[in-house]
Image (tube, rainbow, N blue to C red):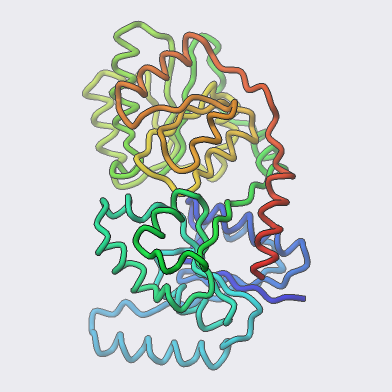
Length: 359
């Protein structure tokens, strides 16, 4: 039985965490021995891990005393190295931003990889020096492979690090159709309003990336035209208050509703007519797969892998308030019918084949 290790920060709600839990649970069922190493052994997804999965906490010190912090972290690295050096057949630093996850993966196996979940050139506003600094801190050259969850992420990375071409692979996130379909049946108090077209956005409230102001500005124009619709925002973050104040200022409190963070957002997909993504950038958007699985059309900006939405699953928009408004209007007036069912089994099989070659 092959022993696989995945290192991450925590298992709080998020796209990376959702993808990790889906992946390790799937691999555990395929008779791999799985270990998950977390900087913080916390998060509501902890209880969703298969109980056979081993969980280790590797928490670096954050002491403000620099000398104390360095000594403690050196001792922790020595202890981890003595316990786990090359003890695994494969190890991944799944949370790209975590320096300790990088150390854990590189130590635990010679067959290791760094997982990339974003277009880091866009993330760092096209500052290639910042991108270089980010990956150098992760010691990217010491990894056997770099895996990106999207073509866009890989292509952007190779513009900065062309020498890594032979080591860099695209491998999308898995989708757990059975789990999502089951969770979508959970009863919620909020009911479908047959008189109003319902849009749903699910994600972190971070204006730099998610640009929810685009949806709010578009909503104002649609309301001025007396369109019958409402928008549900699921999630929270550093810009939640700013969004709520803007909605209040624009007199949209009867149109846009903030539902907060939800461990199970899927019943809300069922009462929505359309899922909407307004981001400037994404890795491979997990919400695409969730929407495909639950047969809900999407409006999305041209984020990573948006071409898949164009294949009969929704409408693609430019990254502007005006075009989002136009596509929302089109969706309200004409609706959208998905004509072909998404084949999650075939989709997952192709990903597992790629991963098995890497393992």
